[in-house]
Image (cartoon, rainbow, N blue to C red; front, side):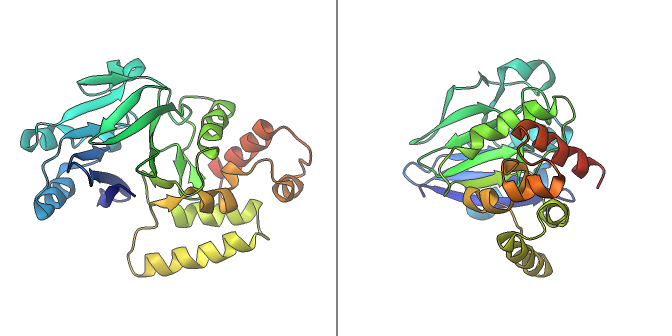
Length: 255
């Protein structure tokens, strides 16, 4: 992987990510829940921050921006269509646009659902996607502004990326997501094993994020509404995937 990727715990259960391009030394930050741990990590590594990318407008993803910018004169990139409720942007992007971190080019993907105009960033040569609160480890974000079928349409775009892609998502919700996943996919051996791995990691206070797309495809029920076992467990065999996803998301909301 051409990125050096650093996971930074923030607030009670948020994550920010630093990505440093090995070829050029250019450093980017993805989401800014709070400034102090991000600035501490940059200082510890002796890195100068060049760019900041925002996935969506929620306060726990942007509130640290002003303080970080007071120390690092970075360029701020976010969704053009959401610029009216994002902090001031230097670069406005839309789905399909290209972004650059040093020698690594990335693509902007619209994953609306959790919020309208939520975006993800996929860097093929870096082998990583930054998904905010869209695709999460063993879950997906609650649908606050869009519709559940819209959320599924966004996730479908991510399903087709290379399975070895690292998924850098925004929260440490994995254990809770997994407990729910077992209610709709109880006989999945990969999920059962992953839950043990998650328990081991959390017992040692290790993050369960980022994950790997292949692991999500095998265990995350929100990526698997077409799976016959899940459909049968829900009493929805043969149903449209969007309808099954909607049922899974509705059950999670009530879990």
